[in-house]
Image (cartoon, rainbow, N blue to C red; front, side, top):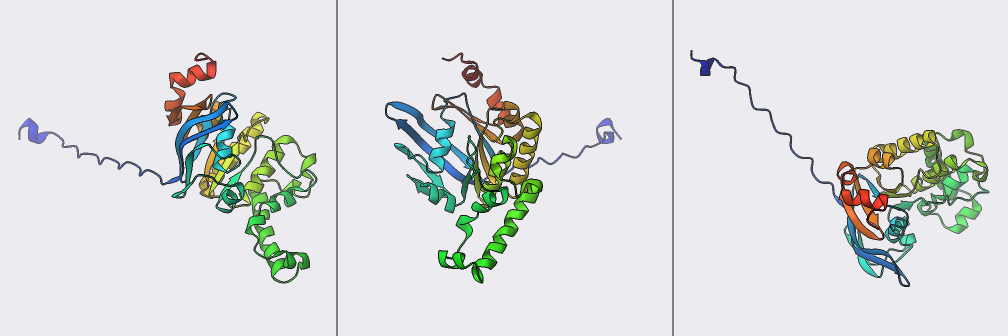
Amino acid sequence: MNAVTAAKVVPAQPVAAPEPEREVLLKVDNVSLSFGGVKAITNISFDIRKGEIRAIIGPNGAGKTSMLNVINGFYHPQQGTITWRGEVRRKMRPYEAASQGIARTFQNVALFKGMTTLDNIMSGRTLKMHRNFFWQVLHYGPARDEEIAHRRKVEDIIDFLEIQAIRKTPVGKLPYGLQKRVELGRALAMEPELLLLDEPMAGMNLEEKEDMSRFIIDVNQEFGTTIALIEHDMGVVMDLSDRVVVLDYGKKIADGAPAEVQASQEVIDAYLGVSH
């Protein structure tokens, strides 16, 4: 037996098939938005794929919140379109966005401060209620059964967010970090397909940020909710996101995987102010 035949033959290792690209849930095409002579967004295009966590980042004044406001219909762009679940929408009105599965939290907490945690989250079920006003006033029969079913959903969200102890507390008496969690709960009560989070970690300490990060990951993985978030904490962005789009002075300067974006010299310059 010669050396060639005696040598141990190592079988070829199978090459792993590339992961299939996710379906595009929402697409932004060449969107521009101006307020008078001020250009908030200029010719921006990107997409959000089903099941991902998509971060939108950039320095202050980059146009991030304006972009979210375009997506859920608070602003109507002068140019470009939004394609939602395959349907092109030149103008997406807020009530249409909400009824079609797009929920939103805000940079500044927007809750009913005199209402309890339970009632605030319950308000997120409004679009899911089908009985008319007459039945709701009577609070009898079908309307009562419907409310009981909605309250069960809300109690499940309260358990998920670990806020059972504050369910009957007026939210105006809660610390800021818990108010942000209640606002997340109200958005989840809408059972959104796409959840828009505008600076969900703003004003939080390290422990509160860790809790919120955990809830965001759980919402994405356990509920299958697609998430687009604006966040200034770059550690959070790099840990949570599947893809990142970077805006600077209303223009897109980078789009890709977190590590790729983090290494971009143009992104580094924008955050350090070098390019301006």
